[in-house]
Image (cartoon, rainbow, N blue to C red; front, top):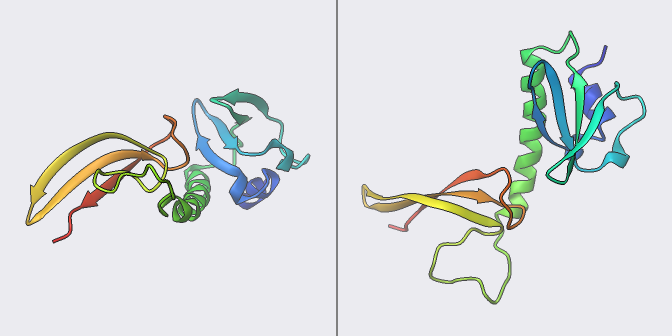
Length: 145
């Protein structure tokens, strides 16, 4: 039996785990670097999805909803650390100075352009880690009053 902390260590640490899914009573975890996984990890099936390694485990009996939430919190903490770098504008001579652009990465599906209580608001989908269509976040911009 292992804890969430044990699993994170076995999979190479917080920075190596990028996503967790829970389909059909299976635990699917996407990692960045397979070489960081310890040999003590429980048995898993390995497959590549969209260029990233994913490990599928049979869901351990002792892993419950709270364990999944704890694992999600570990991933969320790592995403916050990555967001600090992604929120710094990329230096580029072609970067627009007038039109809306994300600090880095892909801006997709701008919508919800509204004027409310003295400010303009715009929402868009954003993938901060490259110009590819992968997992996206929602971003919100407001005008200066």
